[in-house]
Length: 143
Image (cartoon, rainbow, N blue to C red; front, side, top):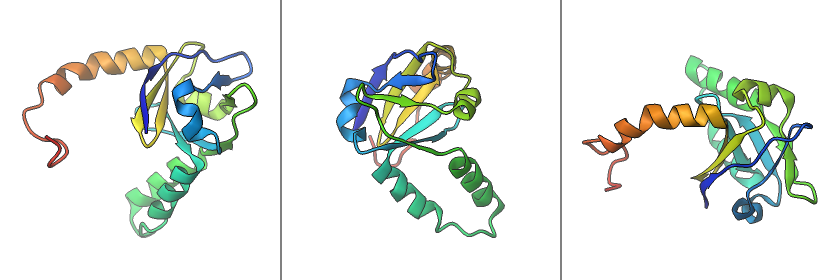
């Protein structure tokens, strides 16, 4: 399970060092793709394959499903960590997420997210109060 918040830096070649706590789960290869809220999603290859299997079952006659499929898969890039545990984030994904040098990498259970640090801070600021004020279950049966 990928957990926590980490603050690596993006180097001049578009590479980022994977957080040490994530390396074992991601050592066999990863897939980076467009996330929502302009972040990037990072999946282990196995987790991405499982997501793909579920996505491909969506009906092609459903416009929202087609749109999601296009956005999610067309931006995907398979990467293998190098000997220094760095992955290269392709230019089109860096541009999509607005990544600069300062990054935030968050563990979100089955996947990680890569955010530009300023965008992450803005996201936290705009969502922390609503998170604290939840009066009903968002995920049934969780609490």
